[in-house]
Amino acid sequence: MDGEIWVLVPLATFAMFCFVAWVIYRTKVENRATDVMAGLHNRMIDKFGSSEEFVKFLQTEDGKRYLTSFTERPEANPAQKVVTTAKTGVILTMLSLGFVAAGFFTGYEPRDNPAIILGFIGLFLGGGFLISAVAGHVLSKALDIYETKGARD
Image (cartoon, rainbow, N blue to C red; front, side, top):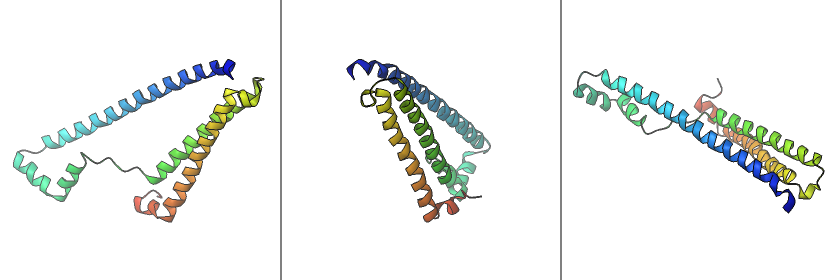
């Protein structure tokens, strides 16, 4: 396998670039959401004529919810979590099947082929995501989370 280790270098480089691109994308999305929320909060504060009005508002139930909106992140929909996990599992499984198929066509011995090894590792990871999605769905139904969160409309 020492002679075939060169195959891992481009794969690792590609994975690194994908990860960096994903981090940059997520950072931009979160910054944009933060900017939008800050703008909304500023406009709401500007609507109050005096600080006394704003203090009275903060003492109401709506005001308390407004204050907690600064620190709380919105809770994700349970159904959306299951779907996201299932999509990740399917994509990882299909990518891994491609690695395994490519590994069989390279002509190397299957036990010494890095593509096959990576493919099987990915297959188990993808299978784990799919099992997690099924378990999350079953538990959400059993605990009646879908009904209480309004996911089944």
